Image 1 (cartoon, rainbow, N blue to C red):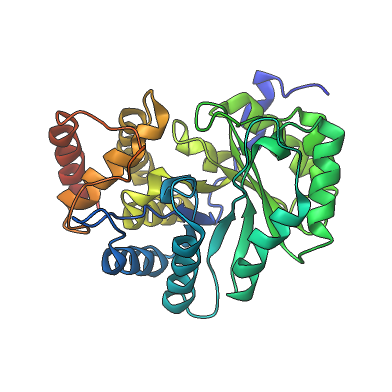
Image 2: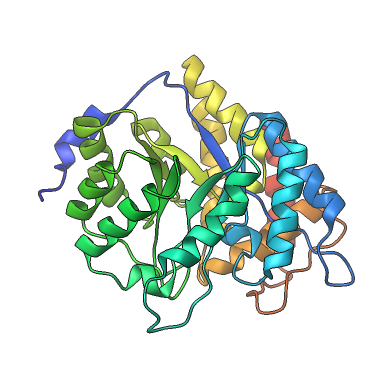
Length: 319
C-alpha cells in the first residue's frame, strides 16, 4: 500500500476536535517491594477525575513483571474506583520465544477484564507477534468472536523484545474486524501513524487510532486519540492540554511542548526506563511513598530527579 505524501499531512489536521485520552497507570511500589495499593487507588481516581480513561495492567503497570493474582487485584481496584466501567486493561499472555499463538490463553486473559466492566487491550506476545500479517488479522477476528469490544495493540521492539509493527495492509484488515473499536499504535513513527490515520479516515472514521508515540504527543492534532504511558506522569496536565485544543486556545502549544520535553527526556534509551522516571515523578509530587520499581525493571540515574523536579514545577506554572 502507498503511504501518505508529506504534502498531504496537513490535510489530516483536526482543529478543535474533542480528544479521547487513555492513560496507562503506573503501578506504585511500596517500601517493602510490594504494591502500594493506596497510591495505586489514588492514581486511578486522579486519572479518572481528570477525564482520562485509566488503562491498567499495561507495560507502564509492569504487566510482564507481576503475577496473575496481582493483575486481578488491580482489575478489582479499577472496577471499584471507576464507577460503571470506563477503564481499559491489558490482556496479557506470558509465553516464550517460539511459542505458538494461543487463542484460548488470550480468552482467559480477556475474561476477568470483561467481567469487571473493562475493555481489553490485546497485549502482544511471542506467539501472537510471530504470526504473518494474514494470520495476525485472522487472530484478531478470532478474538472478536470471543468478546464484543476490544482494542488492538501494535507495540514496537524498542518497548519489548517481542514487539512488532505490522504492514499497513494488515492494519486495513484490522479495520474490518467490527469488534475492534480501535488500536494503540506504538511504533514511535509519525509516518506510520499518519498512514493509519489516512486509511482510517477513508474506511472507518469511528475507529480510534490511539497514539502510543510518547515522542510525538501532538499526533492528537491530526486525528489520533491516545493511550500513553507519558500521561501517567501528569494526567491533569494532559487533560488540560486536550481541553485547550478543543477550545482552539493557543496555550495548547506551550503546554504540549513542555509535556513533549518530558516525553523526550523520560523515553530515551533504554525506553522501558521511563517507568522508573515515572516513579520518581510521582514520588516528587507526593503521589507515591517511594520511587521504587519491581526487580527486573530498568533504572534511571539519580541525576534525573533534578530535571524531573524542574519539569514538575513548570507544569504547575502552566496549569
